Amino acid sequence: MLQKPRGTRDFLPDEMEARRSVEWRLREVGRRWGYREVCTPEFEDLELFTMRSGEGIVEEMYVFEDKGGRKLALRPEITAAVIRMYVNEAKVAPKPLRWCYFADCFRYERPQKGRYRQFWQFGVELIGADTAMADAEVIMLAADMLDATGVRYELKVGHLALMKNLLDGLDPAAQRKVRAHLDKRDYDGLNETLAAMGKPDLARSLVSLVECRTLAEAFAIAGEVPGRARIEQTLAALDAYGVKYTLNFGIARGLDYYTGMVFEGFADNLGAENQILGGGTYRLAHLFGGDDVASCGFAIGFDRVMVSLGEAQPRKDTIVGIVCTEEGRARALEVSRAFRSAGIRAEMDLMERGLGAQLAHASKSAEFAVVIGKREVEAGTVMLKNLKSGEQKPLDLMAAITEVGAHGPR
RNA sequence: GCCAGGGUGGGGUAGUUGGUUAUCCUAGAGGACUGUGGAUCCUCCGACCCGGGUUCGAAUCUCGGCCCUGGCCCCA
Image 1: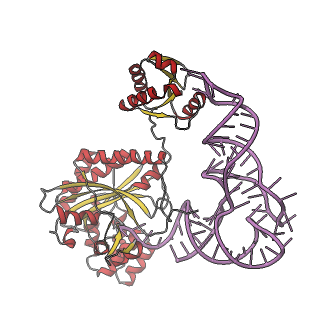
Image 2 (image 1 turned 90 degrees about the vertical axis):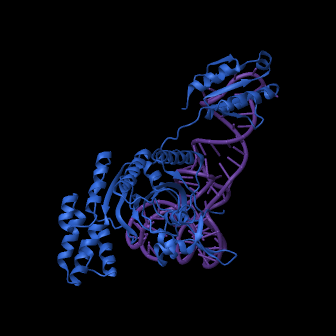
Image 3 (image 1 turned 120 degrees about the horizontal axis):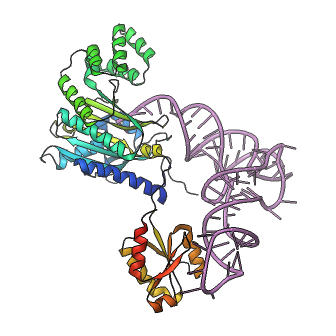
């Protein structure tokens, strides 16, 4: 039997309904903040992604050549494409731009819990605002969105300026190595590396910085940094809005293009792959031929959120089974149209079953049956049967629709 | 790329000192029951991941591959 490609998934209706429900909650939060949805191509020039993330990522991407010999890649993330789109289409739009997106991405990696080769991200990008309030808005929005999904999570907020200040004396390669140690909390490795570089004191400062949880301590360790006022304003805004977060100056986000504020969200109940959100302020537009505009954004790992939420009961529609005899079929079609026009899910028999079998089938999923046979056609009524209680009564069509409508979703 | 465990009808399973027609539950279809369902009974449908090897004979032993689950590495 043909199998689906490794790391991909099929979604049956129950799961799709659960996913769509969460997806729309995220969109709705975005809408309330003024973030409008955009969409970019599923594949792009390979160069778009290597420019952002380096040649190394080619190994982790689905790369292919089209019939014109163009080197293309399925998008491994969305931010680069959105900024490319901004440069191509919206450079002169009034700032700030508030955009969001929900899209699938592809990475050629070993699948594990919460990690798939096709996965979905819900993200936002705030383009053209370079202020403390812009930084704060994106973090507040991130918290609102995670709250809306219902996941239990921890939000960590940091800023790259402090660590950069401490690492100032090291060359870029050494900085990268040190950050890797810190990211993994590999303090033994850190001590070793820095001792070899002749800077054992630096290791102690870095560890205290990563471990400290207040701004005052952090500045005491890292010294004065130019953006101090902005950091303080940003955090004050978060506090005023009631965002629950912890400070963490160890967040490195593994990237060189982040410029200031960075933040990450972690689900409480996931295993090794528990990061469900990541973002920060960055500058990318100049790479794609635009102005050096400041941006800030984040992406939510939608699939991990769904794993974290677990098997939630999807809200089910009220279903009406339209049950009819041969003589009642024409009338049943009219009746089913009337129910559907009223927004109610109505299903008719397609199996040429008898009345009893139709009812048996309806009772497996539906709350109501509407029975239409010769008698109902002649009387101009419908027989509305409540399949849970077994009660039934003849009603005129409008009364039946009203009664079912009043029942509401299960 | 690495490590561990696993793969039997759509879902869940029994069966492995190699031996006839592969067990049971559930789901699905039909019937007992042609104007009223859920119970019960009966019938039907439907599986040994793929390939090589050992053997008279492989779901069972063996090798390779694929896939799944969790972890490592990586994580834009």
